[in-house]
Length: 193
Image 1 (cartoon, rainbow, N blue to C red):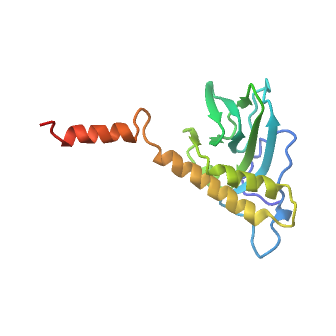
Image 2 (image 1 turned 120 degrees about the horizontal axis):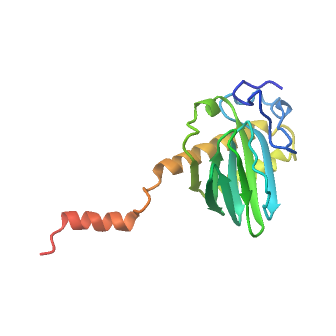
């Protein structure tokens, strides 16, 4: 397998018991594995999440909550995620997920040059139900039910990360919503008399 240095850090590894998506998934259609952003693995768990160990991996992960509610313990914070939430977990950041009830979560390991350029000092997490059908497709393609799903996986992962980043950027500042903004505008521009 050929990866750029940014895809997998030499002193780290993928999560335990994770099957890596190899280059053999990309040999057809004259399409090569994306050097910009590519999935390294796609994993799914449908159960109560209750690992007591904090894990860190050499690659960032895109986490999508497909069903249920999950607490992400990350860097001393507890981030509550529910169905339709997406989150980018920084590389080498100790974390664990826990849930009181069964949950359905998809994790996608990310590699490529974008990983080196992204600002991992800011947490990227957002309610993004639009991610769910794309995450489901990524999961299905990773099962290798037909030959050469690599190019589709590259496209799906690029679309998911782009969508999550756009939604995070567009998010209304906390504490305000469209109604509060409308009332403030009317108060400022219309006289009561």
